[in-house]
Length: 116
Image (cartoon, rainbow, N blue to C red; front, side):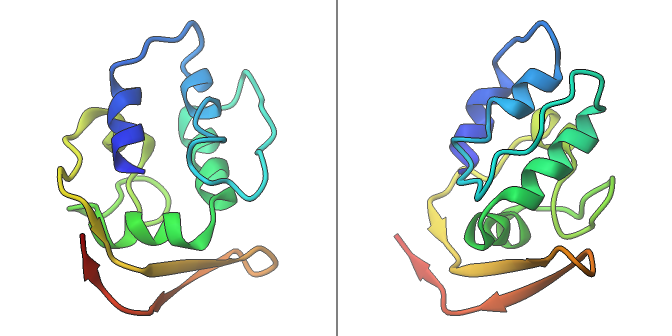
């Protein structure tokens, strides 16, 4: 997943929100978030992360080197993803961050760790 974000750092789009929308298929989204051209980048990013499966959210929780600076602290903001270097190693933490839509809460489940 991180290599996909790294590639997106080098892409150009007419509308910056298009970059976030373009990741929906590549980020293992369980559903595609609604696209709003006028949406802020952070709102679009939050919608995308909320739609991702628990394992992909777990990668953010375990692999990102610093707390998020907008919204949730367990995951990076869109600005951090686009402007900061991402970890350059292949590591499967097998950590899942589950989402409770009704309570707008996230929870972490650590299964096991394995290095590839």
